Length: 161
Ligand SMILES: Cc1cc2nc3c(=O)[nH]c(=O)nc-3n(C[C@H](O)[C@H](O)[C@H](O)COP(=O)(O)O)c2cc1C
Image 1 (cartoon, rainbow, N blue to C red):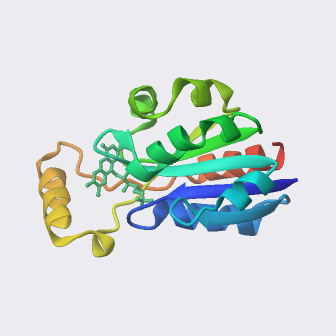
Image 2 (cartoon, rainbow, N blue to C red):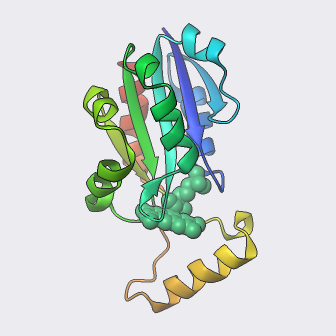
């Protein structure tokens, strides 16, 4: 099956997971950033994997507009989603509620929370300063991490699309 992975990232975490999928899945995967994705790729795909980072409680803005713009095509094929986030999985429903169209949510076979990372070196200076300040003031100042178990489940889910 021709699976198209479309990702929206700011600091590269979601992109790296997309590349890991390409390396690890048995399916043949095309990987493209949401900005570069063409209509031709969308029409050729037999299934979709969407990946997005979470920013201020919402999925990456480019993924939100992509889902709205291409909803009718996305609804025609099997679809699953992974979400890179610093906050724990309990908050995922709220994020999806406000930033993923309900019909695509219902259509998705899975939405997996893969954890995330703060890549300070890839942030703009003001963002870096802000995130460091927020982290300092938290009771639990531990850094978010990628959930390797979730990545394993994601790979399995892609291979059973
Ligand atoms: C400015 C900023 C805001 C963020 N806001 C949230 C948030 O509201 N909820 C959350 O779970 N994670 C949040 N994160 C963490 C990101 O989702 C996490 O770093 C993710 O791995 C980023 O993925 P990306 O590198 O693909 O963009 C935020 C990160 C930054 C830099």
